[in-house]
Length: 281
Image (cartoon, rainbow, N blue to C red; front, side, top):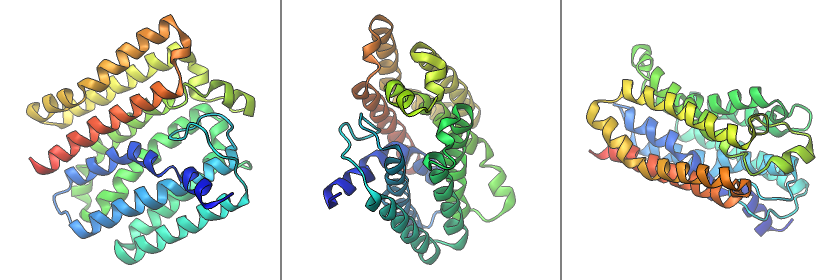
């Protein structure tokens, strides 16, 4: 592998799809330290997530499209070591520039993300377990790893249980959709994903159901004005999802990489915009 191939497999732009959890946490803290917030952003989106992407790419050795990369280059052992080096740098930066607890939590996150694709453990081949683990760690666990930097009082942390749960619900909704175009590739590799269990139509319906539960949580948590703003900000995502579902019912080939990436992009832009709006209004 050359440097260009390694950088491509880091899939740094793909980190944008995980950014809503960061902005949600930042928007909800009352004791924001801007310097630490900037470092948390850098550590998560330029180190932790790309390292996980690289490690996953090394063990999956995908030949077809993967999240954020339509034509992945072939991989070799260099990518394995690069992922570990980036993870170690991230933990050192976290301990020195944020705090020890944040460093510990992203270390744990890194281990769990490696267990997801490592050929000896490979949580990915267990559809329900992997769905639960991904949602919890990319959602609530990440949310709390950020919040705990700013909120030290246990009572204050209790106030974040619902938004943390909502973060996990949002990931649980998105995760099956991210697999909908990979059924053939995953089956060839022997991985039975939750999207394969649900089928194409079932994946759409399941995602709609979990999103509905998540938005019910938003309704409970937010003020009426903020909840109405959430709906307005996310209207483009809802419209795209419905139109895509109808197209897929008529032609299953519409459940493809391009449409999946468009949904991920729209959902991320809309949610990020809403959470940033919460930060500044």
